Image 1 (cartoon, helix red, strand yellow):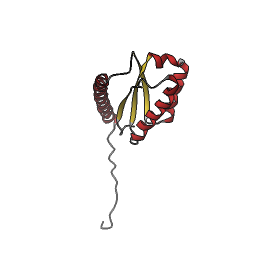
Image 2 (tube, one colour; image 1 turned 120 degrees about the vertical axis):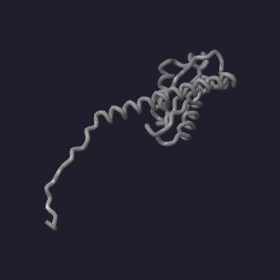
Image 3 (cartoon, rainbow, N blue to C red; image 1 turned 45 degrees about the vertical axis):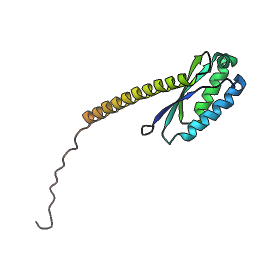
Image 4 (cartoon, rainbow, N blue to C red; image 1 turned 90 degrees about the horizontal axis):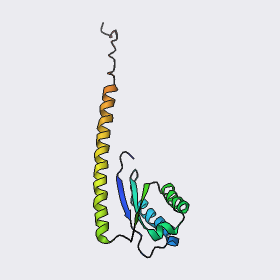
Length: 141
């Protein structure tokens, strides 16, 4: 995972997605995201659920669906859900994409700082190799 990339995917079920169709739609979207990911990449899904979808399924059922996605598709690291009044408009999707890009940039900066700090700690804790002197005689002596 250290050499891969992190992606944030924004999932916006349309008005045609009912609580009964949500599982299949999510599996199709998750499979597509997992297929696009390179080895070592990870994806965070941001799922925008309308009240109809969120409350149309029992909480345990929705949790089971989301848990199954993270277990089945290794590229999916986490699924974040957000409750909305209606499916996002194209303008709202663009705004969410901008927000996701800001979050990715902050994450990248924190990851770089962490890597620098760990490298500095490793250099501090590394002892120099001892010099070993040998009294070897050459064939010319």
